[in-house]
Image (cartoon, rainbow, N blue to C red; front, side, top):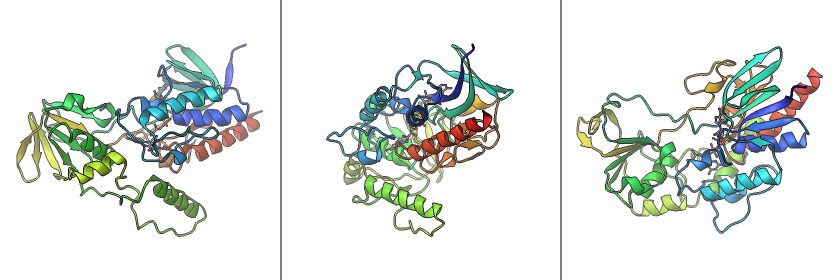
Length: 353
Ligand code: FAD
């Protein structure tokens, strides 16, 4: 008889594993399909020195906690190791090196197309993250620029920027962490739309996640919540950023309106040459492979109530950001929504039988 799964999860990063934890508990027939050859999801591609802004206590998936180490804020490699061991610990059913190219639906069944063949399933969870959909703003002259140009998603370490005058664009945590690192090896300028805002040194990840949790609870209960004291979007003072701030490297050069072959043209009309530009301008959502099933906006956002698709019965999207569940793109935050998603899937499957 042909194999039909209850659930196929597309992904293989933290969101897929969190779903796997609850799928295993629910004893559903599932498989996780990941295009990468090894565990780690997007963390495999982040820059080498990346330190999480979430403290260890707030960086675990459901069940088995991230092991202790001397680092209060886990290092990238520690997350990669944790995800690999987590998968082994629960013996999750993951098939790697399997890229899903398209999904079609016919008479209540999903047909998941991969380069290794077609898988059939009653429901689908899309958990493909953001990393493969980097966002670079449309700016005049961007095609004329002849220097080195990369998105932060492709930045690994400062090695190839040594001696290259570099412009880092974007005022978020990625921009700040990359400026901090590059400023030790080369001349770096920072282009930000607004003056970068840093959280106070004593407002660490513990505080942030506590405030975020309290805000979520208040919103759920319909109660007012005053989070005006600290803006949760401000830059977190992880050790590398703290050290660079003391060196006085975080000076914004403002914004530019155009690029030319050798660099940028600032708003005051001045031209400035740069050997390299690093775009720390965020990500869209990696949902294009669902195009036969749903429509998304230009960033890849689909119509959902939390993780459940409003367009296609039997489809859920997990871990992309607040639109798929509050804080669902974080290690700790994906727990609640993964649990809820699997409960919804169980209910759906029971109704089908
Ligand atoms: P991903 O980790 O991107 O995994 C998706 C997987 O799906 C990948 O393995 C990919 O190869 C696979 N895939 C994609 N397309 C297909 C396909 N068509 N077929 C099969 N497989 C496919 N979170 C925290 O909790 N704490 C932090 O401190 C923190 N710091 C961050 C710092 C930065 C700079 C960034 C960018 C993010 C940070 N995050 C942090 C956020 C968060 O952890 C990530 O967004 C997380 O990687 C999302 O996990 P995911 O499983 O949803 O997606």
